[in-house]
Image (cartoon, rainbow, N blue to C red):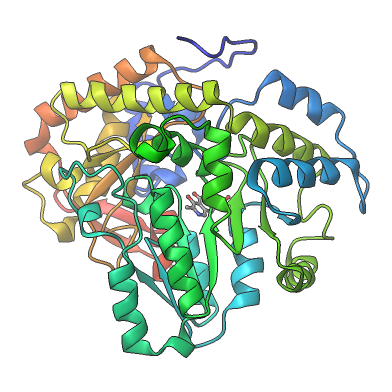
Length: 448
Ligand SMILES: Cc1ncc(COP(=O)(O)O)c(C=O)c1O
């Protein structure tokens, strides 16, 4: 059943093969360097790339641009209280701004931070405070074929080992990322969030939920965690987020906005400390780097994100892409996650050794063949970790339909049919901070 119809459209065009070849070369085989007009179906990210609703556009026009005390900030505060259950909100220009505010407040040099899996900006912000990010995924997360319903869960057993190794006094923060973006967008059960909350309380740590995709996660909980089969997405989201002492949020995901983010908490002391740091890095604490109109759109988007019809539509659109790819014989990570389909690049291009970045080679080939932009989230993006070679096809919210997906499938099918011709890649230049490598490094084909 369709939940939306279009009111505004945007013209797109598949550039010629020759133009795509040139664009890829000029981009140093890094699709972050492509111009969007050279891309036909853009699955680089679901972050800030979605289609806003008519209600969000209406809210934009009524945005209050007052520097302090704007009505749009009050609308955001009230949406966060209703939807997420927190009374204090510190806005930021986007998720990583909120990460800088929160982790800069909570962490010191030498601290150690367990997380089910750190997303790249989270890893970089933890490292930037001189702390050590440690991933604690459940073992099934690393197996693209395991069928567990909550492969995004946090392994408390692994985190206990970390605490035993480094000493409880060095673990002031525990993070849980829902859904687990770097583990193929897999969901986290409410039961797991409750257990992590108990674990964090045991070691006297602050429990932070990275809530970027909290609504998609709640949709999965309703489908897969029997205790919640009759609950609404809104009820599940509140229940799960209530486990945390603070949430860090990118409004560009389940805020259904093009920009924005925030930290939210009920802890008045943490709130005051975050506000101080936010003023230094983001802006006054009632706008935090966002225009009033963006605060207003985010306030509306947060409420829409927990509507059952929205979440049902969202999980169905991403599920459809996964199903079509699997039917075409593309080796995908199963089950399909909340915001993206992840392709197992090592299985798709088995002739390429890990050192030749099979994931990035696949990303380049999808673009060359069909103007489809995906992103590598394997050994190129995460150089210091032992990760499966995944390529993410992220689906912007409320934006693409079946015809676009059919083009993606045709493209992937052709790439796989001609896989033996796909060359590996080597790095030509890379930034100093290894955690940010995939954004700016440039590469070249190993052969030719
Ligand atoms: C789990 C997670 N945390 C944090 C961020 C950072 O958010 P932003 O891109 O808004 O800075 C992202 C972005 O993709 C994310 O997926």
